[in-house]
Image (cartoon, rainbow, N blue to C red; front, side, top):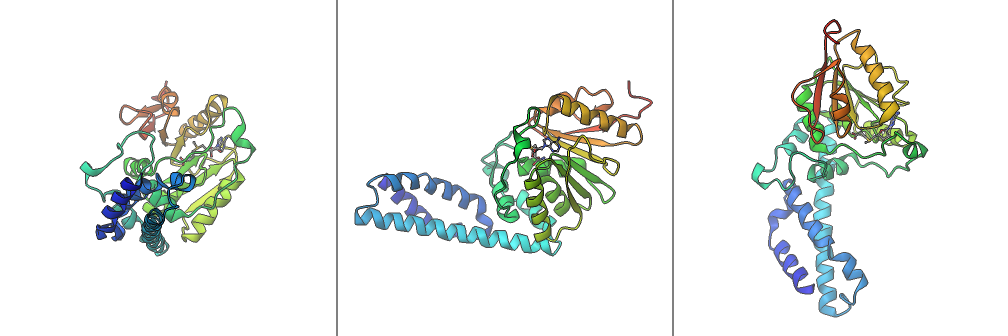
Length: 297
Ligand SMILES: C[S@@+](CC[C@H](N)C(=O)[O-])C[C@H]1O[C@@H](n2cnc3c(N)ncnc32)[C@H](O)[C@@H]1O
């Protein structure tokens, strides 16, 4: 174990490019590889010999340096967002790594370095999950992976006349990124008061004016201003049915669009009043247009 860690320490010490702020993805991979040793170091005799203890100190010092560069980077991105320049900054990151170096697939649920970036920039305080998370038909909170949120922003081509409504917005990743990266207004609707509070704190600290978070049940919220409605499978069964029926009534008065991610996509694909823009798949963002009501069966 000590030999392997020694090799890693040597490799990272001799690669100053890892300290360049734009090398976030490589730095996060390096931190992951080093992290794998620390629980063992704490539990085993490893670290008691003076050479091992030195190695351990060196490894921790490298981690601290990498984390300091990451913190500086997150602060710089926060400042850009506060000055209204967040869209260009974040989109640069989205296109940063050459395609062949991408370690995670574009599709699928897994999180990647973009989620680390967003979490470092948003700096949410840890929320306490409330009772709603335990009710049947309520899907517990997990955020849409950041690359899919950017996928949504690209696919829906949101403009200043759009209002995106995220049903079950959790800590607000989707409305916050929409507000940073587009001219559209965004609204997050969420049952958990704690999540709403965290999302509002984040919007305020980033000086975002075009995003609102409402502590409400999606079945009761006012949908009249929404033009694009997003669901990352927030609920199932009768709750999903009730919200889809409300959306269908909205669609009787004007054209709306629905974006989905996850298992709810297959349920929503069966709604006859909706038309998929392209063949929907649950592990990618899907986009549906409401049909002209006279054309809807
Ligand atoms: C899978 S998470 C989606 C989080 C967020 N939309 C995202 O994509 O990052 C589902 C969220 O929906 C919320 N939720 C479930 N039922 C709800 C309801 N009836 N009204 C409002 N929010 C609800 C849950 O509390 C949870 O935070």
